[in-house]
Each structure stands twice: as structure tokens, then as C-alpha cells.
Length: 202
Figure: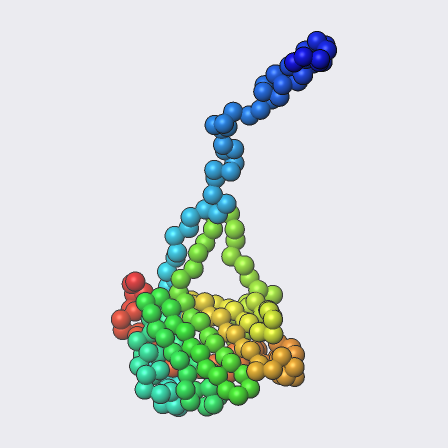
């Protein structure tokens, strides 16, 4: 390093050595906290279903369903609730699976969907949440998100979640929770596979 004072060379060498010592090793140990999962793995719980009396089946609403939807309702492993309004029973989509059933219907004014499930997840040290509202005589959570009103509650040992969306966000009916609460109160029972679900075996 011709022309560079010896003192400068010594200082530069010391600085480089200090940097090398401060540099972390290429195989730095992982942070133990980072290796822990953020959420514990929880096995879903199959709730015990409480079936309403067969005499409480709304035969009028059941008859109003198209054959495909009525068949799905009868095969459901959870008690099936549907809106009682005939315009919502004219052409719904009703899907029944092993642990849940869903209902979907649309008119020119609103879209309604109802999910019914007997599956739940319970996390250690987290108590079950109880909504501050009431729907069908049960504690409920009523919320709104991007113009869609939702109400969720437990009935018959099953979790129900009702969503209502207006065709136009400016529709007065969707300006408050009045419509979703009204529709939830009008839900009627149309049956399910009570015999197959006896004992609530999965």
C-alpha cells in the first residue's frame, strides 16, 4: 500500500478485524420462540345434537322446497332451519354433508345464506364466547361487514350462522340489523336424518 501512512494501515486492519468478530456465524441458532406454533393444533369437537320433535317439522315449508333441496334436508345430520318466506324457498341451494348443512337463496332484493354445523374447535384456556345479543332466545353475535349482516348462535346443540345481503347497499332494509334479526326469528325446522344421527355418532 505505497503512499499510505503506516498508522492508517494499522487502523484499517483493526477495523476489519473488529467487523469480522462482530459478524454472526452463517449457522446462527434459531430463536426458540420462533419455532413454536402461533396456534395450538386443536381437534374439532362433534357437538351432541338435540333433535326437535318430529311434530315440530314445518310441513308447509318442507313441501315448498324443490325435490332436490327437500331430499338434502332429510339427509342432513343436523336439524335444518330454513326461512319461512316462500320467495326464499322457491329455488334454494341446500347442501348436506357429514357434519354440516348449508342453505342459500336469492331474490331480486336480498341474498340469504345459512350455515349449520355440529363441528366446533375449543382452544385451551380460551372460554367459549357468548354474544351480547339474543337470537331465537339464545345468546348471539350480530355483526355487519361490507353491507352483509350476520347473526350466529347455538340452537339444538348446533352452530347456526345467518348472512343477509341486500342487492343494493343503499337499501333501507340493510341499513340496520333489523332484517337479519327478523329473518332469523322466521326460520322454521324442516327435519333431518334423525334416525341416522341417533346417538350423534359421526
